[in-house]
Length: 123
Image (cartoon, rainbow, N blue to C red; front, side, top):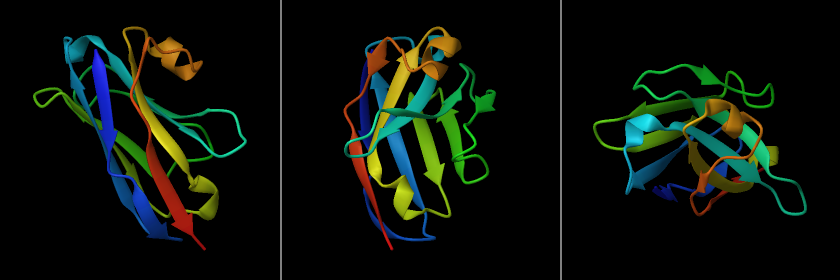
């Protein structure tokens, strides 16, 4: 499956941004979908995951819980990351990813990665 992330940009502290990830080349509903980020000089970080179904279960790390929301639309082969109350420490390149096994996303070992989209939060 091929993944294409978009929607990054420059936003002020406290602002919001929505990232999108378009999937192609596979049966989208077979895959759990996740988001990750990587700041300069830092390791890639898990941001959240959603299970296979539209409106599926989600899981987030404490660093983004309550601020970030993942959703998906299986009819459109899309997954989204709504980011609210953004902080400068959220600045990073954000990646979407897919795997048939949700746990593989949580442990930062998905089968498929998209290219990144840069999010910059100014203070």
